[in-house]
Image 1 (tube, helix red, strand yellow):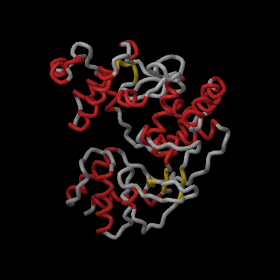
Image 2 (cartoon, helix red, strand yellow):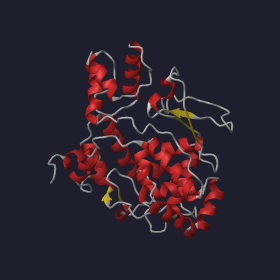
Image 3 (tube, one colour):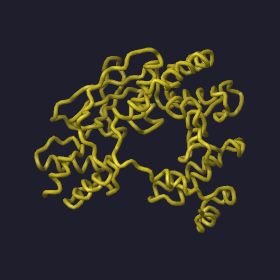
Image 4 (cartoon, rainbow, N blue to C red):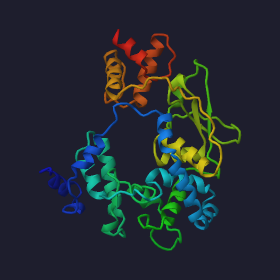
Length: 351
């Protein structure tokens, strides 16, 4: 399957890639493959923190102990944090991806639904143009454009990748993972990681708390002097129905690596498991219903019809939707936590 306009678009938009990229419909299929129900944090953690991944990570800790010790000394970060990222991204290098990254990025840019998204993929493609030393055989990775053992996007590779020895370009694609692990440590430090500890704390807040100040990362709540004097940012993934998660500098750096609280907590808990430490119990709202994407779109549409700006009706619950729902919740005297439930949907549909 091909798209007859793709090559003309590439030649006009990014001529340096003309004739070198191919339209990949399978990439679009993966991009559209959204689950009907959003996976809860606790279900995600149960799936990714498997006994096999933990055992394999402990084996990798032994296999690469000398290199990890040197990376720890160089960057001041815990080896288990870096190992956990490696394990979650590619199962310790077993699943690095085999898709032609320039073609994937060009396909995603060509069919992007918004100009912002198109610009994002084109920027990644431009970053590849800026990196002249990558052999074409190494331009392989995931359907979304991530590459190597720890799945660096092209911009991240261009800006932060560094070789283990420090005297040559980083080869994050090699079977030897040391360049990828070194590059990951450098990325985290550049994004604020400061210590061997991954700093995450859980707590419950009163229902009259202003949940609007928990928008992360732009307007994150700053709590200084919490245990260790660090500055934390809070997130309430289930509004008033579950715990608020406070992320310190290291956890915020992990969030920058992958903008998902699911991912951050998976890295934190896997790192603790790899270090033979106990994972703290978290009182998740396991009986809380999770809305489907179609149901979220209905909530968004009801809010728009009532005059609230959700910044789109796309089934993706972002900052605009949370703000709009909080405004409606205030107007009807409910706890303004910005979290959509089946009860919220029923109440909105009855107005």
